Image (tube, rainbow, N blue to C red):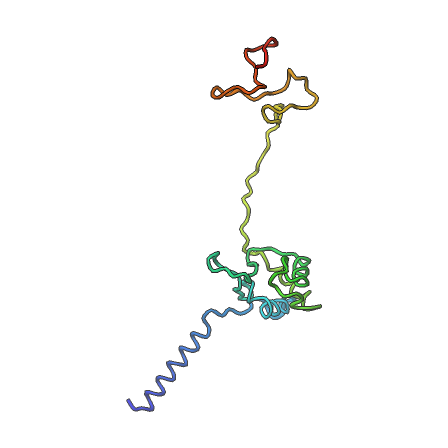
Amino acid sequence: MSVRAKIAATATILLVCALALGGCGSQGIGIAKSSSYRRGAVLFRDHCSGCHTLSVVGAQGSATSIKNRLRTNGPNFNIRNETEEQVLYAIRNGGFSGAFMPENIVLGAEAKAVAQFLSHYAGRDAPTEPSTPISQSITNEPTTSPGVKEPGLPSSKQRTAPSSAAGSASPAQTTGSGPSAKKK
């Protein structure tokens, strides 16, 4: 094989590797160009993807583990749902804590486009809560704790806490039983 052939083969291999590696880890915007949310998706990717995660635009800026979390990692919008009003508030005020997100990162119509996009796509991978019905049984039992006097009940109807067998008696405990019992 001549030197020229070796250089051409090496260059071809390097070009194929560069093309293959260039596609790794980069995900485009998964929204049609004709969608009304496309502009907001592009703005979100360009301005917000460094700190927030949202798979529909290939953004992976949130921490995946508490061990590697940075103070600047924002919420993961794959699992966090947002309304348009919440997004606009966060954009104007630098998030909800005001600590790390720049205020007014996008303005006017751009802010509105990001808010509409995010409110539509955020929270799509949020875990669903189980739909186990929880019923409350209604009883005629009093709901106060033992030893707590209920207003309006005569003292003979009050519930009292049982005395413990161990330990010394407190001054409020009585000896014996019945109406003739005396306090110590």
